[in-house]
Structure formats: structure tokens, C-alpha cells
Length: 191
Ligand code: 5GP
Ligand code: MG
Image 1 (cartoon, protein in one colour):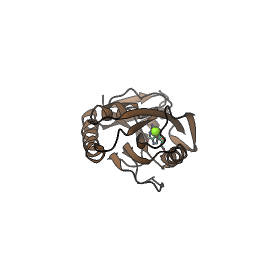
Image 2 (tube, protein in one colour):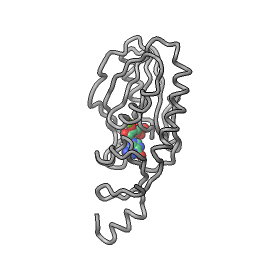
Image 3 (spheres, helix red, strand yellow):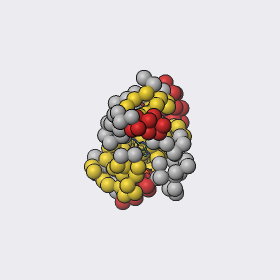
Image 4 (cartoon, protein in one colour):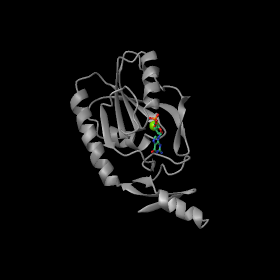
């Protein structure tokens, strides 16, 4: 599929499933190299957007590890609200443990800054950050992202776990907002 329509917005193909899988391979290899001698780290998936990346990444991790989740939300529609809400707390204790955060996308960095505080307060021994996507042009955080899979411009994207107003997460490829097509359809009044 080259184009998708989600509610009032048009999107065009940006990264294919194969390109995503290659990037996940590379990140998994680095994590396997770096963490193979640590005692059972905990991979922390940030719901909801990271669920596909989390599944694909974890299939490639070749050392014993645990998994847990947290649910945070900062986006409404296509822009960040600036405040991060904790919708579901940590699903298990991370006290004294090495944690690898698994994020879908790092944009301004507000979410991971908040998460870093949550994990410090919860007594994590170390925290590393992996993300499928990063927008370096928007990033204002002070945390080093240890394992970014793909860098992208400051455009709004959907698919492979990422949503537009909760839809589009099931798309296996990643799509970028097509501003011209969205405007054109608005002009001729079609959805
Ligand atoms: P940050 O707090 O770094 O500004 O934003 C991170 C969160 O905003 C991500 O975990 C994701 O949920 C959402 N987000 C940021 N950029 C995009 C985007 O381009 N598309 C979608 N669907 N969500 C995004
Ligand atoms: Mg996220």
C-alpha cells in the first residue's frame, strides 16, 4: 500500500516493513553485544506505540531477560500536549535492576525525561534507551539515546504501532503525513 487515509488526513509510504526490520536487526545486534554479560536486564516497553517494535526486537534478543510495560501519553492528534500522563504504572518492580527502555519514537524528549525520573524514583540500577525512531531536529532532552534504530525529519508519522488519534497502529509499514494531499481532499470536501 502506497497511500492511506486515516480520518481527515492522508499519508504516504515512508519506511517499508523490510527497512524497519533491517534497522531492528542492527539495534538488536548492538544490544546483544553490550548487554550479554549483565544479569537478566528488564526490557521496559512504553505502551502503546512501541508494541510492534518491542515484539520484533525481543525476538532477536539472545540472552535471558525480563519484560515489563508502562503506559504514558503525551500526544493528542498530531502534536504533543507538552505534559506526559502516566496511564498505567510499571507492571513490575525495577528496584536494583538494569533497565532497557523500548520506545516507539523520541520527539521532543519530554516522555523519556519523565520516564527517567519515574525509573530513578523506582530505584533502577541503570537505564538505557532504545527507540525505533528519533527526530533529532526536535529533541531537547539531556538523556543520551543509546540505541536509536532510525532518524527521521520532524514530520508526523503513523504505522508499525504509531497512531493518528488511535488508528493506524496496525499498518505494517510506516507512513508520513501528506500535507498536500490532505489539503487537496479538504478543498474538494472528501474524507
Ligand atoms: P516526546 O515526549 O518525545 O515529545 O514524544 C514522544 C511521544 O509522542 C512518542 O512516544 C509518541 O507516542 C508520540 N509521537 C511523537 N512523534 C510522533 C509521530 O510522528 N507520530 C506519532 N503517531 N506519534 C508521535
Ligand atoms: Mg511512545
